[in-house]
Image (cartoon, rainbow, N blue to C red; front, side, top):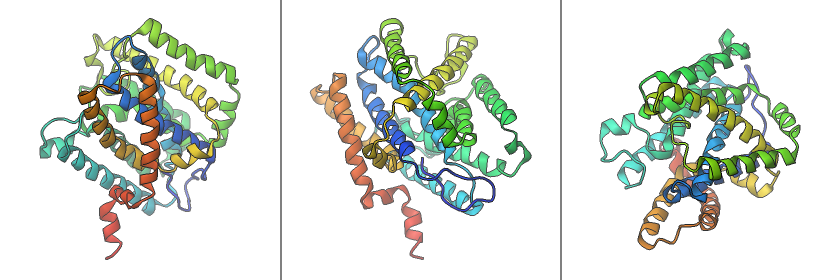
Length: 340
């Protein structure tokens, strides 16, 4: 989620961009909002439609931006950034198992700790995998053949659904979302912004409103995690249906991502939050767990507007917390090693 800053002999990474940061700020809010909706989104409800709408594009677009900021500039510093991501993953994976949270894989065990990323941590493990691929891939001849590489990424993504793995080591999601990461890796931010600006605002609004209307009035239920890449095709009623769902998911994710990018304002408030997305992403699950517990006790979190407000407050408070020493939780061992 963060840019790797160093001098490059291979390719260039986009400089800090307020619009991109604002987009990341909006997306991290939608991550928080979507996860708070999980416990209050029965089929046929407005909450269900909003949650499914968010899930159709927020992680594909986040992953696209991650690819955009994953160019190798200094191999040594790039590898160090991957190691620090692995450290962040290991620390929060342990915290998720030690502190009782929803969405984890049950009783703590060493096997589960190694094998299954808990709840939101799949993204960090997949990001490590994608960046390791780039680390070894950046100096090969295939790196310069964008069409072949994108076709390969798409083939692996679609064919991966036939492999009988799911959340183990986040392998299924790593394969599923790889084309979004590679698209971000190859596309220059200025070109992306020019493409996005070609879409009229009215069309972007129609796309978003149409998707929400379809999900609420016609679909009426969650599309399930099959389309989000959590599971292989065998978890669907048929392998063909699983494949078609993944293809449909890709098309929806691309169209909605472009529409959302067109409607994202170049807002300084969002841009500030967008610079702290990693901490907010890692910490919000613990806040969500507390909110879930209180809601089960007092049933006060039923309507989308109240959840929206709570998500907004949660995102902002975590942004403020990210500016304190609490941010050291992301890399405690690296921080300690600086003193030796």
